[in-house]
Amino acid sequence: MPTLRLALAQVNPTVGDLAGNAAVVRRSARAAADAGAHLVAFPELALTGYPVEDLVFRASFVKASRHALRALAGDLAADGLGELPVVVGYLDSDGPPSFSAEAQPDRGPRNALAVLHGGRVAATYFKHHLPNYGVFDEDRYFAPGDTLTVVRLGGVDVALTICEDLWQAGGPFAVARRAGVGLVVSINASPYELNKDDVRLPLVRRRAAEANAAIAYVNMVGGQDELVFEGDSMIVSADGTLLTRGPQFVEHLLVHDVELPAADPDRPAADPGEETAPDGMRVVRVPITETAPGPAGPAAVGGTVEPVDQEAEVWRALTLGLRDYVDKNRFPSVILGLSGGIDSALVAALAVDALGPDRVVAVAMPSQHSSEHSKSDAADLAKRTGLDFRTEPIQPMVDTFLANMSLSGVAVENLQARVRGVILMALSNQEGHLVLTTGNKTELAVGYSTLYGDSVGGFNPIKDVWKSLVWKLARWRNEDAARRGETPPIPENSISKPPSAELSPGQLDTDTLPDYTVLDQILVGYVDGDSGREDLIAAGHDPEVVDRVLRMVDTAEYKRRQSAPGTKISIKAFGRDRRLPITNRWREHGV
Image 1 (tube, rainbow, N blue to C red):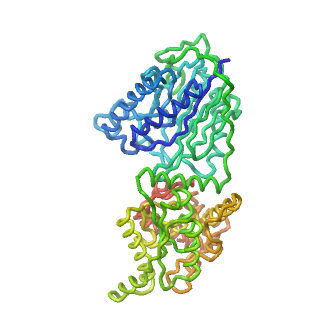
Image 2: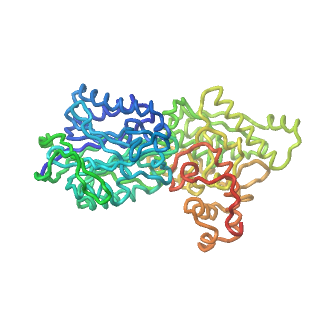
């Protein structure tokens, strides 16, 4: 049986940076060649970045992608890498978009991969299954492929697939079995969700059984707007054995030797297309290298990196998402309001871990209602983390407003939040910082924020983090620091004290909201699980509390629509995942 040395390049591309992404491919291809690889695979749309969204509809961008692919093939050959087969995702098109008056059946923009070899594009494949749920809108953008490409590489037949092809039964993997392949290469841009790593390995094993072939699964890493990709690339044998698994949330080149069945000598290495499936998928066979020398030197063993625990996984996702949003959009630094409370403390700690203390500015903005412990807790966190800490008292500004306007009650409370927002935006304009907002998912769900006040900002690192998870993450981060002999970044008092917006005397969150333990359970059911009122009551929740919570959620949609983007970590994040009308009179019975 032939042994192929496979290299899976878990890289972090940037959407639209064709030249930069091509340079990433060239560097990783060089590293793969130096490691003696027979093939190196890169993630889905690695050349353009993922997701490209409506850039798909720009003919100039599609043309640039295709040109960049051909140029990359030539550059790899010029780099002395022409004999290394390189599998890379890119944007292609064989017709106008489906909404165009010139649209043609079964043609249009394509989510594609190419095999680059010998200075040319040796083979291509168009994604068959197009996801159209959650954060995905691929049916809007792409035409599905109807042909499975099988390349002959080193005496092994290798099928090529893209992401969602793996997540749905049937289609390319069923066809791959009938085509008699020994290996399926699956290139992916699969966004992170909490505990998704627990789903991924069993899924790959099911597809290996379906195809009766080993699977080399490579996934993107890095942040792109609300999405973050975790990597977690792996190779699984035909019998489901995990051969190697890469790390999460870091770039990595996973290199491993895999013994694979030789191609059937009775099957041709080249074939323009044969019908193999009831759904009409064809198989096109393309020869790349008929034979390959055995791997040089000692056997390459990629090793197995076990997934980290839940809090560590979320922390890494949030820091990576924040870092890439800041760096890819070329912000020099970030600024946030630091109140001494748990939410802003957590965001400050995340920002310092993501960017370093020299790129984080935190501003305490006390009012007459700010407690001494809040002021001291904010200063304590600044000392623990080393960030740039400033104090801007807001009471003189608030008093100036009140001297010229007659306001009372909630209007005065919101005025304080909006003055703070003005201060942060003024410093952002003056010094170039990106403003981070610090509201958690629970607050966004029930509208517990001031529009154009504490909700102000360009990015929200904890937008998809429930309040109960905020506390867990804070405790985990401090415990992790203690285990490493470092100073815990978050003051214990910020974690243990009752949460309060401190906009009026003696104010506590529980004056307005149910206990967060109860509240989050209802919200997880209603928001993440789409449970109805009766479902929530049947789960044991008090009907009056359910009605109150659902009313707050439903009437806060206009606020959420104006909120800053933030890293998705749950199955259903506000924004791309959950799309509800603002003007909407439907209410659950009893609300």
